Length: 363
Picture 1 (cartoon, rainbow, N blue to C red):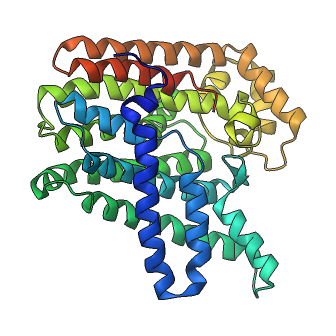
Picture 2: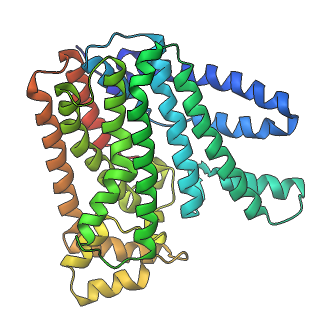
């Protein structure tokens, strides 16, 4: 199988886009039938969902399906496309939690609605209106994710078998979000240590719902048992790769180019994210390095000079190099798990390429 961009294998990215466009067009008509005042909701979600994103989660779910011997179909593509709506829910709420200004180079949803409040001259505080609107839109995406999944056209028995995976994925995502919030509020290491806590947040906040659980979802839709050898092999691939994916995200959050990431440089530093980079810099740094971390990390007014100081500490202590080593090791572990012989060979080729797309990206 000849592969260019693995996200386009089987023409998947275009098919996911088509499925999302069709679903949103129908649901926005329903919204506007309730009230014309809901038109801005549809417009905001159109822009958020249809003008960006790598479609990684649908890709892992689709190729998990194919890895388990499942056939290609438009119904399968529609079902896995629903994961983009769940992802949108997580991103919209995450931007509220972090107070982020930008997402994919555009105003975050809460900022967009705060600006709309100002433009319309509404009463009350614009920021409150923006946050409230974003919470509602995120919740709507969560509901729509269920709706799109159930209405994709798959057999009822396949959907019923997949529901425990879908539910577990959402619980793990929300648990990871809370652990992330808790780590920022209580920066003291827990009994397992700061690095272990950072890796646990990486696993649950992003890694599992980006890679492992979508793989399981697709495989179970193809008839695989969650306790069987196919899902075991997919876990052996998906868990380390999911952690590597989030660790790459952490690196980009500090060292990434804003023109590529779509977010201001150093946003994670302003938010005080207790990532593996931070944990390693603190444990490996001397008193001066820890003083820089204590002085600058988590400051909302952190400027470019402060970002540069923190970057220097993460590089000079070896924290950046160690995170890169962990990413490489986790990725190698994931790739080795594909050699079991229990997964479809064509799907394995794409999953190998997807590992690179997930861990070597720049945005």
